[in-house]
Amino acid sequence: MNDKHIFRSFDRDLESIQARVLRLGGLVEVALEQAAKALQTHDVSLAETVRKGDCHVDDLDHAIRVDAARLLAMWSPTASDLRSILCVMDISSHLERCGDHARNIARRTIIMAEEGNLHGPLLALRRMSRFVKTMLGDALDAYVQRDLVKARDVIARDIEADQFYDTIFRSLLMHMMENHRNVEVGMHLHFIAKHIERVGDHATAIAEQTIYLVTGGRPADDRPKHTIMTPEIQESVRI
Image 1 (spheres, helix red, strand yellow):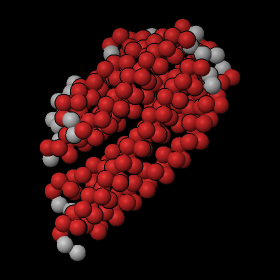
Image 2 (spheres, one colour):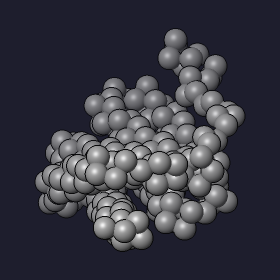
Image 3 (cartoon, rainbow, N blue to C red):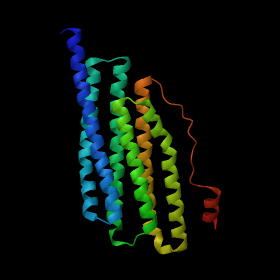
């Protein structure tokens, strides 16, 4: 077998795995959209669909990582080819975790079905969900296009996702302090907000993998750190 044929075979196998990563990304984006819709509309049937559908995300992630490991063992790639395989495995893992977050949002939606709800935070959660879903889509586009500008833009937007979360946390905290009957549903919504925020973190990590893939280096971690426990919130909790 000549070198040219070997390289073609490797490229074909790698392209097949990358195509499945994009299919995995599509499944996850649909799950996130459906989970957000089920939460806003109290659609238990749709939430159940998301919950049950997570197994397909898990299965595809497993198949991707098995085939990527096989590619490593067969070809012993070096330099940029090695980075490509490692990035595929890492991105697939991040997408699988996003699928888990969609499933967990659906689970809490089902639990809350018989309880009251808080209209204001629900609208904010819907906006936040759309924001991080766009981040995830852009991160995948940056990966496909090897677009460093778009990847860095996704990373920069992570602070906005954190600010969404902080605002919702403050709102839920106030609702729970004003009326103890809001505590249970408020805690469920808080965990949902955290799941959505974590999707933004995974989108950021995928964008960082794209930078690593293209440049061979990791982006500097110079983004400002965000904390939900501002002095105002600390004072509210103490009181």
